[in-house]
Amino acid sequence: MTHQITLKPSGHQYTVADGEILLEAALDAGFVLPYGCRNGACGSCRAKVLEGTVDHGRSQKGALPDNARSEGYTLLCCATAQSDLVIECRELADSSEYPVRIMPCRVQALEKLADDVMLISLKLPVNERLAFRAGQYIEFMLKGGGRRAFSIANAPHDDGFLQLHVRRIEGGKFTHHVFESMQVKEILRFEGPHGTFHLREESDKPIILVAGGTGFAPIKSMVEHAIHNHIQRPIKLYWGARNRAGLYLHEMAAQWAAEHPHIEYIPVLSEVGPDDAWSGRSGLVHEAVLEDVADFSPYQVYACGAPGMIDAARDDFCAHGLPADEFFADAFTFST
Image (cartoon, rainbow, N blue to C red; front, side, top):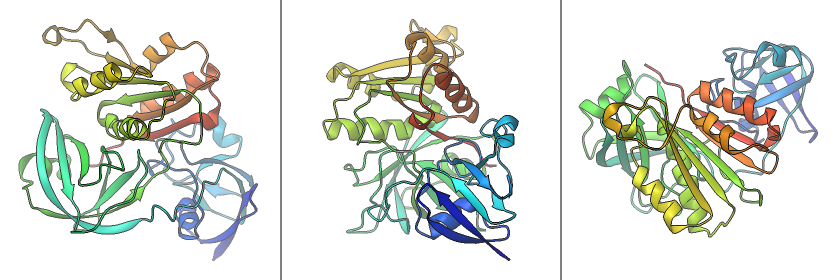
């Protein structure tokens, strides 16, 4: 059985089969809707069901709390149709400039940025490049059908290699392979680019960037893209980690701020230890932002990290004046 989906206010229509994810069907039909993690954690794909009923699937309570569900909201990356639907949502510009591709790649280099963070440099086939927006991610296609998503850490102009920041996850089969047995010249296959977490260059609003841990990877891509393209919008970059070692490219971020007056860098540690020799900010990273910014209404916010940080930042920033449609996020969840 199929159901007809109507998008408002555009009036665009497409069909889905029983059990088919609404977001996937929209993308297949050529309609670009906002999304990030695609696993119900970041809330980027939240939309309002005006008519009809849906099954919310694996939507996580932090991204879609009960009060939002009762008001008709759903997460398109998890929801399936139980009837014909009319959905109110934002649509983005055509993505034909950045087509999703399946490509082979070769591991060109491996570098430990911290004990639990590996920089992987990937070489694409000769004369091939991946067109992507700063902030997007790729998905490795593993044997047996599994996938693992990682944000691209380099800027689009610096595309000789794709760079990824991979954190070791306890029990994670793929990350165990990365840290214990991956070899230079190993061949992998990926699909991408994915995600609508990218810098909105048409805006002139000042920017707040919030990174937690390896959520720094897509933020790094955005900053380097902004610098390369002479984007002079004021940027406040907050990077949170548990300890000093978690700020694995601290000197790079500090150099951005030193060389570019419109960039401010604020590192924040949540569990300062005696070996950290730390005199900077401490506590939760999104709370550091709240300490510095009383009124968020003039800003755009881009946040990437754990779902808990994303949920708290969204709720608190919007409660202090941030328009909901100026909060862009990608939540990192981990598979074992």
